[in-house]
Amino acid sequence: MRLTATLVLGLFMATPALAETHLVQMLNRDAAGDMMVFEPAYLEIAPGDSVTFVPTERSHNAESVDDMLPEGAESWVGKRDEEITVSFDQPGYYGFKCKPHEAMGMVGLIRVGDPDTVPGIGKLRGKGNDRMQALLAQAGG
Ligand SMILES: [Cu+2]
Picture: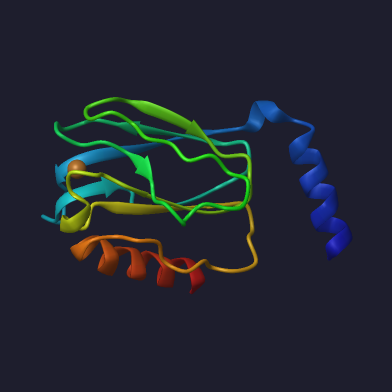
């Protein structure tokens, strides 16, 4: 099994053209009626992929959560109403949030590659903390 996984990984790394860009929308309300959300709030992507955070509705931003990045990964901070594209090379889990609506639960999680362990939660306020707990449970399950 390990040999197969190594071979597949080797093939993938040899073809960077396969790197994908995923879209995450910043919304005031989603189809289910939830307020202040990233859609989707949880993504599983491959190393080398990118995510574009799209300000579909106003007054949102996308930034990394302190203490919820893999070792050696860079943090990022998007401006309010700014479309920002972030590339993810380092395998692991990346927490992100909208600063104005963090306490209302506007947070998300990206799983890059096949990391061994789900991290602990970073510092998040209000419903952001509850929502991140749920996303981490989803990632581990
Ligand atoms: Cu927001």
